Image 1 (cartoon, rainbow, N blue to C red):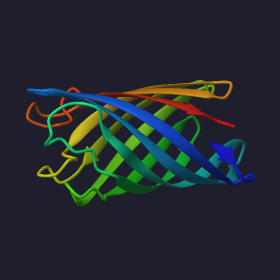
Image 2 (cartoon, rainbow, N blue to C red; image 1 turned 180 degrees about the horizontal axis):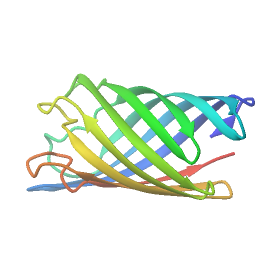
Image 3 (cartoon, rainbow, N blue to C red; image 1 turned 45 degrees about the horizontal axis):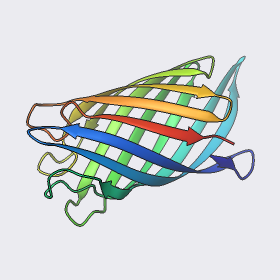
Amino acid sequence: AYRLNDIVALGLTADYARFVRERSGNAFSAGITAQAVVPFERGENYSALRLGAKLTGIGGFLDGPAEMKLPVAFAAGAAYDLVPCLARMEESVLLGLAARGVEGGIGMEYSLMQLLQFRVGYHGGESRLYYPDYFSLGVGVRFMHLCFDAGYTVAKKASPMHNAYSFTIGLDF
């Protein structure tokens, strides 16, 4: 992310995901993010309200079944830092031609010395579309200006998110 000032930052992401079902597919996509962090003090503890938006899924499948489409999604969310946990809620709108709908999620993140993050979440969506209901687990590492994130989804066997995993590499300036 590139910080425009003390509150607002913009970023670019690159994502790789592998989906495994009866057939498998590999996808690569890019995203654009914006975040505003409004800090305030709670006694001796630091807290912040985080507001963000992102446009993701710009790209598509490198291989895999033709009926598997990677929709572009717009998401907006809010998070409140509770040292050292982060509570997050997010709402997304799918913009792809193959799937239109709304999905949402809620999750928690634990950060260890702003170096290592552990995440768990639940995502609810329209199961007839690309984003069905699933649980997610993740871990992230921040070192210098590099960000590495990995995620895994736990979903029903018939779901396109069953046994899906993803890796993200980012730069933080």
